[in-house]
Length: 64
Image: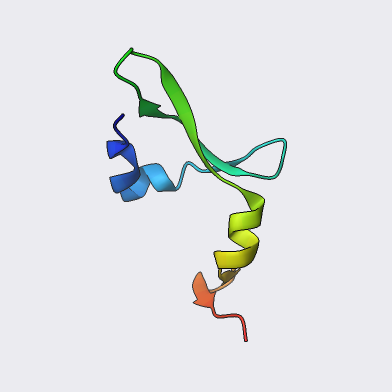
C-alpha cells in the first residue's frame, strides 16, 4: 500500500471529521488491488497523543 498523499502538506489540510469522531483523509491509501481507502486517526489516539491548537494564532499549545 502507498500513502504518498500524506507527504503533501496541502493534502493534509483536506482532513475531515468522520461519523465516529475520527479525523480522516478520503481516498488516501492505494492498495495493490487498485482499491482506495480512507486514512484515519481515531479519537482515542488524538486524546492521548494530540496537542491543543489555538485557532486564532494557529500555534500548538502543549497540554500542561
